Image (cartoon, rainbow, N blue to C red):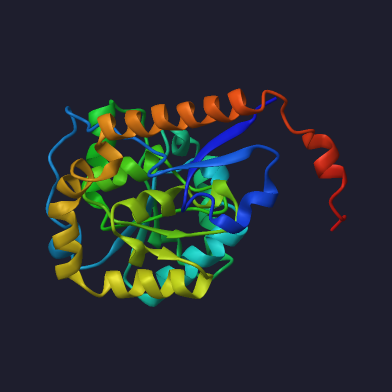
Length: 262
């Protein structure tokens, strides 16, 4: 049993309190990220070299559900020459998984050669190096990325996310929010496609993001460990003071049962 849930104002907006039995304690920022010292350098924008946009997702394939495929297909249709690069560990070594993905996109009108895969199990540095082939990252939903999102951003790849109503569907949005990149967070599927189209049509913007994202991350609250530690310490102190004032926890089960059924 838990009394508190640490979160932030994007992960859990004020109107989500009733979804939890725990008391929500919102930190200035929830996530912390350690810069990857051994990451390969950020490479130039691939679209400048090959003449078309490559979208990418290195997320777990289990997150790529039918709604995700449908929306990503709409994104690909905005630029007829664009490609999608999928990668996750060495999972796409499996021919059956590659065929399944291709067929699912084909059902939405996407040609086979527009869905590509990075295969083989590589070192961590080599894994990050595959982002040199990606112009724009696409975040799945409702299960967003976290580590994958940070890695893409660290390699200079902006990530577009569809924010939902639950914590699991607002993780990438929280990261982007604290980086000052709210324009990459969509609230509707239509806005997601429009965001992808706008970004894909602005190579100068993509190049600027590619060369500045690392500095943006390291100078953001997401990389300010001392400030984060202080905010957590303050949270613990507030919780302790509340307990000292009233050591008897609320009967949350009674409180929940008293609520009207939906």
